[in-house]
Structure formats: C-alpha cells, structure tokens
Length: 329
Ligand code: UT7
Image (tube, rainbow, N blue to C red; front, side, top):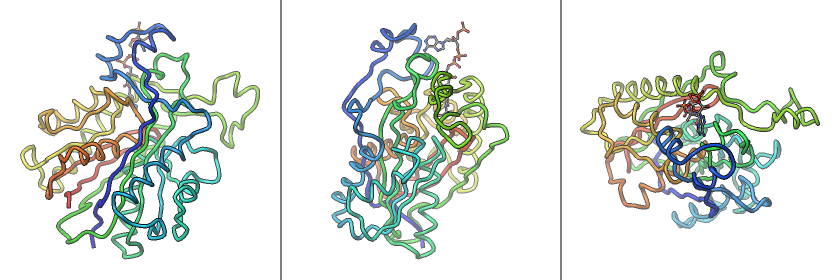
C-alpha cells in the first residue's frame, strides 16, 4: 500500500519584513540580499503571544476543512520543527489540543530544514504498514524567535511560516510517495549550523544570554557548499533510481534556503527553471515550512495535475538532507 497526499494547507503570518526594513537595522542592502539569496521579503509573527503551535494549528484546521473530515478521524500528528513553543510538551500535542484530535497520538520531529521530508517519510511508513489511515504531517517554524537581528549574515535569511499535508492510503500502488532517500552527517555538520543555548548542555543562564547562545549561528559559506553538493547529488540519485528525466518531471520542489542553491540543483537535474518551484523571494527560509508551503501553493494554483512527478529535496542543520519522489494522485 502506498501513501498519498489528500490535502495541503499553509499559513503565513501577516507581518512583512522587507529587505529595505533590514537596511534600517544593520549594514546591508536590498541588492546584496536579492543577488546573494533571492530573498525580497519574509513574514514575521508579530504577536509575541503566538508561536509555532499557532502557525501549525492554523494549518491543521485548514487540512480538516479541505478534506472534509472531523478531528476525531486523525490518527497521528507529526510536527516537524526546530522552534517548538517550548522544550516540552511537544508542539504536536499543542496542535492536537488546538483542533481537538482526541483519538490521535502526536509527536515532534526535529531535522531542521529537512524536517518536513523526514516527517513525511516517517508518516509514509505508518500508512504503508497499514497501521494508520489518516496522518497529519506539518512543518513549521517561528524562526524570528531564534534569529539574531544584529547578525546580518543570518537575519536576512529566515522567516516564519508553516504548512502541511494529510496523508492517506493511495488509490493504487502507482500513486503517492514512491521513493525516498534520507541522509544525516553529524560528523561534518554538527558545528556549522547550530543553536547552543537552552539545551541540556548549556541551560539558560546569564552567561548563555550574554554570549548570544539562544540564536542561530551559521558558517554560511561552508553550509552553502555542502548544501549545493548534497541537494544536487540526492536529486540526481532520485532521478536515476526512478527513471526520471527532465521531460517527465513536472516539478522540482526544493528547500528554499538560497536561490543559488535551488538553481544549482535544477542545473544538475537538467531542469529548466519553469519546472522549479521557488517562492523564496516572498518568504525567505521558513526551515521546516519551506517544502510544504511550496506544495500548498502549487496545489492552490491548480498546478499539480494527476500523475505529475514531483521531486522534493532538502538540506539543513545536522547535517540532514534527502529527496523524495511523489506521483500526484
Ligand atoms: O537552510 C539551512 C541551510 N542554510 C543554507 O543553505 C544557507 C547557506 N548559505 C548561504 O546561503 C550563503 O552563504 C549566505 C547567503 C548566508 C551568504 O552568502 P555568501 O555569498 O556565502 O557570502 P559570504 O558569507 O561569503 O560573505 C561575502 C561578503 C562578506 O564580506 P567580505 O568579507 O567579503 O568583505 C560578508 O561580510 O558579504 C558580506 N555580507 C553582507 N553584506 C551585506 C554578509 N552578509 C551580508 C549582508 N549584507 N546581509
């Protein structure tokens, strides 16, 4: 039995921060940001009382409505996030509470920017094994809660947002999630993209606050190089394993970290940019949100025809990366 996506939904907060807004906060400029990253603006959750569970909860409500099912029919909720409302309970349990999915079990999964792909693959196994028939997979991050707005190298990149899918048994074995290749490399990745404060190694203290350890730190150049190689290699691997080529792929749906990484991946696949989903200009990098936001936008715009071959690829902290092949049902 294969697993298919039967509904998509996204939620972006209303607050907009443009490159010009950032010019007023630190030394940068719109031209640099657009040419180096492809980003023009990003969305920010302005209400300090609302966090990742709110973003994901809005997605969950829409998924129920779009599919026309009750919350009590949901059997499992997986939330991919690296910015949970709090260390515990999980954000997935908070989402369960928001929609009243009393029959579900729920947990968070943290694979940073690859979170959605890792969660979707996990959920796929529960459908394929016959264990569950309705699984919600949501990726969302309130990145503004961990971005250091005095660090111009990271502050320009990230935005808040969430999106997700409902996963159910496919109509036939020809449709749905047909392949996945997931990878991690803590040895080479653990030191280049991280937030050290607030965990069990460095619990919050005056010192962790003073040393700005509750913010993202990234060696951008190093991560960029690894991301280009890993995303391109994985996309090529997915194509080769599934006899896909530039002709029969409908969409490449890549993680939205940098337009130059997206372009390099597309080039390696031999794909024209008209087949590449990119909305990084509007939202920046929403971490676990990027890929499902892309999926939801394509779906809203009626661009996912039955039988469309989709290739999803991601790369993020850990390092974690991977690719998936989905035939749209
Ligand atoms: O989603 C998780 C995975 N994350 C990623 O995939 C992100 C990967 N990395 C990147 O996207 C890029 O490395 C960045 C966009 C973060 C940086 O772009 P870059 O082309 O690698 O720039 P750089 O870090 O090599 O910096 C080049 C120059 C430096 O100045 P000097 O040393 O050449 O004088 C920086 O100080 O650009 C300067 N710079 C800036 N200038 C204006 C860095 N940030 C800014 C800025 N505005 N915001």
